[in-house]
Amino acid sequence: MRLAKPLNWGLAVLALVSSAATLAAGKCDRLIATGSADNPPFIWRDAQNGKRLIGANVDLLEQLAAKLGVKVEVLHTGDAKKALEEVRSGRVDILLDTPLQAERLGELDFVHPAITQLETFAWVRNEPGFLYSSPADLADRRGIRTADGPVVEPVAEGLPLAKTMRQALKQLRKGEVDFVLHERYSALARLDRAALEQVQRLTPAVAQRGMHLAISHDSACNDPWLRGQLALQMTELQAAGVPERLLVDNLALWKQQRLAREASTQK
Image 1 (cartoon, rainbow, N blue to C red):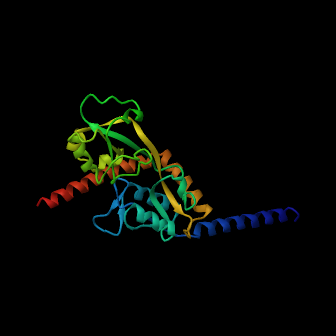
Image 2: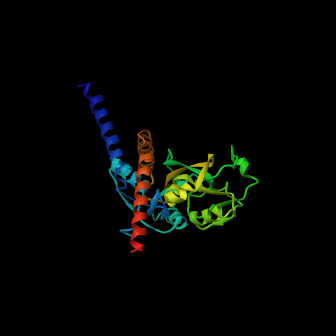
């Protein structure tokens, strides 16, 4: 009988721990997420349903949510600025595509590891003669940055701003600028084969930053269990190479959709 007491006490402790874990896991059974509506191949607006977003980061979050046993809904809320505001307010739980920024640490919990590394390159005309070994070699060159890709400040501070990558490339081809700063995956998504054959990217990258999922401090779902599980599952998916595969797959999907749109407009 004396042995039974510790055993019963141990079972009671296990029951309490199990109950606490269940409560933690059951606190939030649905996550709402958003991100920039025009950031392929990471995220873009679904042509079939304008209220939804699709892309590599969406697919990744859906895999994470499935592992956690929670439902996820990804909503179109507007551009990057509007998406950030929705998450900061707590109306949306998760931001899908944000670099780690010190000024956001009081508003967002960033999930580690990063989804991917955003590498910003200098893109130049595909011709010999541009000597480059480090970003310092761009100091005396005329550069331009673009508004339709992931943010690259502070590297791009002081450079003129082109509305789109295509517009910037026109200026590059005309010789009005010497280089265009743009993130690698975004450039591959926005340029067709003909345009890519006219440019080359200089290595090493001018800048590199991690792109993260981030949870709003004001989200009702933000608790230690969720943060810990997202970090754990993200680590496992990264080790398996899942985020990179999703980027490659969604880059191909985006290009297919773009070709289909261009074909339909020509009819």
